[in-house]
Image (tube, rainbow, N blue to C red; front, side):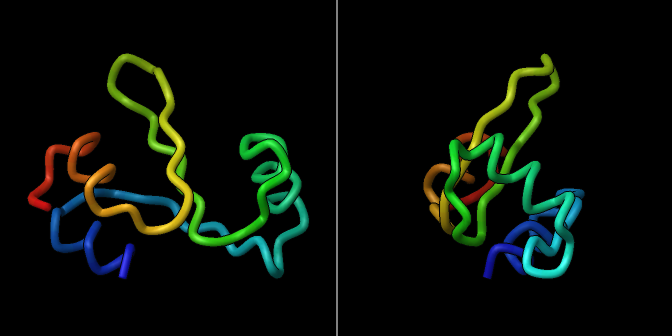
Amino acid sequence: MLEDYLKAGNKQYEKKLVDIDEAAKEEMSKVSNGFLGVPFTVITKDDGTKETIIGFDKGKFSSILGLPA
């Protein structure tokens, strides 16, 4: 659902498969304070600040990315 939502909104993203990529899993664990559920999203804003979203919280994505809810 998340990928479809981002594609529909014409947003670029990088997908990391933490179940098969150990480096991605370690990176996620550090950024998420140990949370290893998916989807876990890190959005880097234009000003360089980062927002994290656990799960597919459409309202939060809409607010951060300016997409329709």
